[in-house]
Length: 496
Ligand code: UD1
Ligand code: MG
Image (cartoon, rainbow, N blue to C red):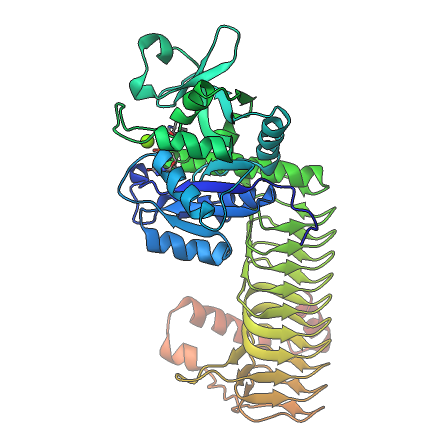
């Protein structure tokens, strides 16, 4: 806890709207960009200005939204809006709830749950201008080429902010105004409380407009001002899926750029997607078509990509991860993964270890320096250090009802196509022969073989596939062997 809480008295996040243009069964503010829900971004920004209280106003899909909010930020106050519509009513119910212990004093900030690119820096600037100028209301505005739908900022001839006119209530002259209301404000708590009492629904939409507070505050002798941002993305809301994707792309562009400035090489920013929650160290290299999600952490000098998707994966220093789809894995320093590798949760690869091409792993701990190089499955297993698992090895962990463990020691060498029928244990330094089906424990240092004797049916092809290409070549080979019996010509015959 910081000793002195210097943030505003409260931030109120408005999130009661229906979001019908999304055409979705998922509430709009639960849609995601950059690995966070829209309202998750709003909460993150709100928390970053260190408010004494944080309230969210909900109504549409109330229970779904409330449970999401409880997960994200259990200490935030969830306030239900009643049947009365409008942003003014939304703030009124929030303020009543926040006032219930003791009436708020100082600055109350209002933001929206569907404006995901707003940064804590811009919100802090709004608050500090508001407080240093001693304003009653400070509104965040932007100048747009197309202001359709937005509330317009009305200014006196001297430039003083006089109020806001909603698009639907605006005159033709007012519709020509390009400076718009972002819907994000800093209010003096007492002015807000008094003004909300006087707001009516006497307008084109029959709603209580929060925007009316500006005119009322001015009329009561308060100072009203604006902070104009030149970064329109920070005030842009996601109303439909087209805007959602545009905001998602811009969010990603900003995240990727920030990582490049922090010392990460990103070969192709356009095809590299990084969630806000990902952590990267200096001198990481990300190759094209790489997506990093959730709680992924990539350490110094590691190379990830191309064509790699990692979710909640820790990549150790200097590791390389090529063409891999992974989640819930921990990859040690200097380890190598890929290409074409599927890492599932619980995969832990030791330092300098390897999980190679066409491998699937799940719930497996692989010791330092051990290699699973090609074509196989390792699940519910523990593998020691400096063990080499041959090509095509499988841990047969599932008996149709239960999963069982395979434990393989250190310094083990397994032959190609070994199947470990779990539960089974292989001791340190043991070997297995090619094609072994290991059903019993293998003691340390033993060679496990499960061989059926090979039988060759001589002349089978000539007898059973007469006239075929195989038969002709087989006959030619037999003839060649017959006519090349002197030692000298045998040597020549073996030349490549
Ligand atoms: C509002 C502003 C407008 C501004 C625009 C910016 C008002 C009257 N108008 O218009 O000046 O340019 O935002 O985007 O404030 N909400 C509630 N409860 C409600 C109504 C809305 O919580 O009863 C929430 C919505 O979920 C949304 C936000 O408030 O997050 C804005 O609502 P919306 O209907 O989009 O406002 P606009 O009419 O676009
Ligand atoms: Mg509206």
